[in-house]
Length: 476
Ligand code: P53
Image (cartoon, rainbow, N blue to C red; front, side, top):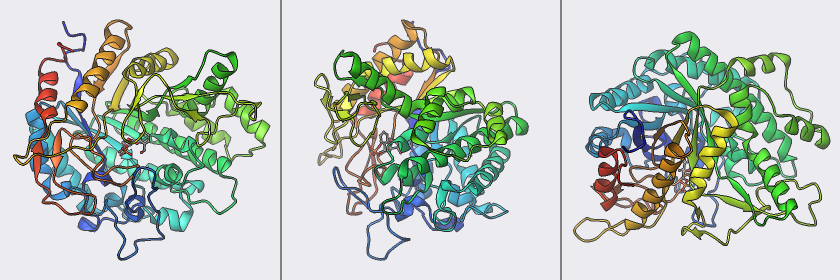
């Protein structure tokens, strides 16, 4: 008896902009991902003003899934995937974002892609906005700081819900909507919300305003989905990095609690349809005067999500300091290294127990079905002359995480729908734009500089994961 339900959704996860390529094919418009150059660990990706000739934009061609998806899905089927999480590139459907009519070539592409999945009994799980909003909405409207984006997003959502309602049951609205809690850096505000800040601008209230419009848009999309087809299941998508206190000093504990409040209130609004009081009090203390209307509040209560999708890669730790008497959390300054866990080459803290803790945390707070829609180990893989890749470290990472996930289900009674490890085929890293930060069960011959044949080959983890799925993780 394995502990996972018989219909547990084992699969893999990707996002359109990180693997499709074909950035100008089929009438696709430019997305925010198309104006981000390649960076590295410790070197931020540059966000350019439009596409500038001569710069390296890794998402333009990515791993050419746009042309090779049939072969790739065949490999996913071989591993035994029950589901495949990807996103719909908004710019394939509405190239600029503000058009009245969708682009048929883009809609057709996803029809074909979903048909290919369904041919093998693989259920598509779809994110509507995964770091790839139309760039035109940034230049013309200022991104999500503009209320008009609500209508554009809801139009996009309604078009794809209507079109794919008989092919896709499980959806998520905004990928890792809470990354922007880290508003001091440029990456998350831009990828989440298309926000570019003026020098000296007070970033924090702008982030809260953009997130509010997104939460309203998400709620209206949920409402639209229910009207289109009540069988559709719409989730939110949260980046879960639980924040531990560095010590058991009471102030460290309070600091960790405040940090959790600041990073996870987004879930409260998605699930409960209203703002937590601690955040309203914080807005008042800071004097943030946000545009939140009575109509918005009503929309939020009518568009609560059906399940919680979340990513889990690592845990964080924090600590109270004398210069922060209110114990306010600032993600760019408040995190400390956890001495009890190891780190990946990119500094991500490896903490399988944190996954069990996170599952329990979500379940205790919200009592909604949970779906781990990303988890995995970004590492440098070395391909041998015979094409093989021994990624035993990835197997170790995943085995440890699946084993903790099993304890959460079997021992703690958490309701878990499925598990889709991130980057099931090597793809472009979101954070750094690198190819060499790999997550896949399938190696893709492509390098940071864009060279490589794009050939696919299974790594050691491929048959390992195949076995996990086949046995429903009975031996982990
Ligand atoms: P990369 C930060 C923290 C946790 C998850 O990330 C994050 C990020 C952003 O880098 O992103 C998610 O590629 C995201 C994926 C992304 C994946 O995690 O930076 O949903 O698009 O690729 C892994 O190693």
